[in-house]
Length: 301
Image (cartoon, rainbow, N blue to C red; front, side):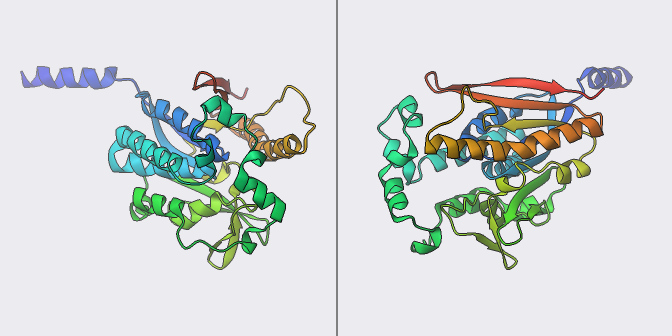
């Protein structure tokens, strides 16, 4: 009987599908990171894959850190819970979002930021973030500190986490990994210089990581060479027509600059090794409150 039970267990183990090891590259994009949350929620529900590495910038860094912390604490189920808690808390924070509270999703997304009273006043004053009174309480810092166990995150080795920020003085990218990731590193990675003072780490000022790597691939994949890569891109690559207004021109230059590092590094990776690279482009449907992903998988010859 014992031999038969052992044989059955071995047969079941052999029949179980081998989980595909993947690393995730999460692009920054402000509140568009909420759409990345939807992709992550779906991936965490897929029992055929195992996430062994995450690299993220700006909103992607926030998603990545919350994701990895959740996986380390209690696996995919806990990670899904943590991501929901994070984005629901972000959605309830005061700020520009409160102006849109009485609008439908479609109305809100089609309302130019310049029409928001607080933004109009800031533009009129032409203020630098350094000209404004500093706030003693940062709600994002408080949320991240409450939600993420950074000591646990730094001590674990099962899942590689990579976060990038831009040195405002030297214009060089700094990559934070499991060993030195912190709440300051996450805030630096998402520090838009038009709205926030630089985040100081080790005596150096840091801005949003999207300026130099959106996200950074190399540092993660050198530590995780035995996995495929899934890139979640949130900024549009193509537009139906060339922009003409000041706002549209500015937005388009940001999209192009933020996508340039993704395109160049993706080509380099395809030529460098035999890993599978899956690119998820998020197409947002505001009318139906859904997002869909166009998947493009490339394998080098």
